[in-house]
Image 1 (cartoon, rainbow, N blue to C red):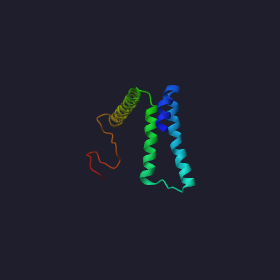
Image 2: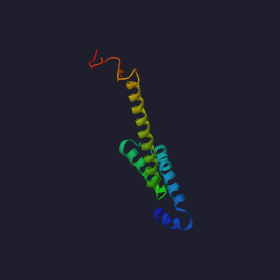
Image 3: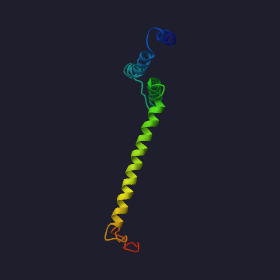
Image 4: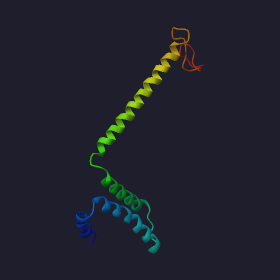
Length: 117
């Protein structure tokens, strides 16, 4: 019956309503099973339920979600690279900015010839 209602439900309503219905019915049925039949959902049963719910959420994503994710990752990578370049340029200024000649040190535990004190 669920398949019949699911197939005919797409004709009368939007797919998103059916997906939301299935998404919320699974935890509801698990709750009823645990209250009425004292079922325990541990380990693989719980993992299976979570994976099914994640699958329903993936169905709700737009068709071009990978483009959005790619753009987001490119922006984050560009921000990270710019921060790293800024850190490197600050380190170079710190080591070369103490009276010229590169006499500055990054660590106080090292001698000018890079031996640990």
